[in-house]
Length: 167
Image 1 (cartoon, one colour):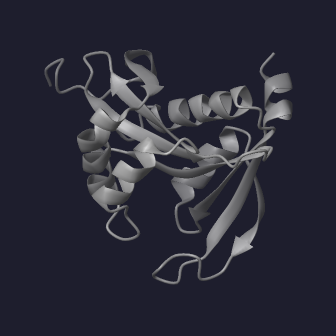
Image 2: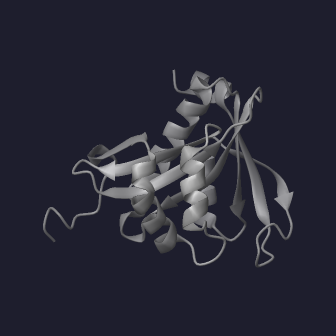
């Protein structure tokens, strides 16, 4: 395996705010990550321009995108929603998802939120374990949440507790 083919490691990744010109990269990650319940390109484009949405893009040091996170905010709300997180299949298992979650938590805190919430497929044990390791706790289940009828776990991260734990 050459250096350009190596999977990214946390030390070789950076996370930055995404911009409208990152639409192609985000759409490609979305298409590679989700067979169902995926965003249409036009919806991604709309969200990239919306002030109540924030995209974070994880990329290798050479600039190759490997994952994204989408956060939604409501004016005056103290909770942010981690609406979507996707990592390209070739980059999974190398810390990109956790780096995106950490960056999402930091951004939510910076924007005045005390809580970060999300839904995750009940069957997605790897994602649930990663969220739990980041400090998220299950707060309930939402039956028939997804188009295919699968149940979602509703999870929540108290950002003030997380900040105390990392000091």
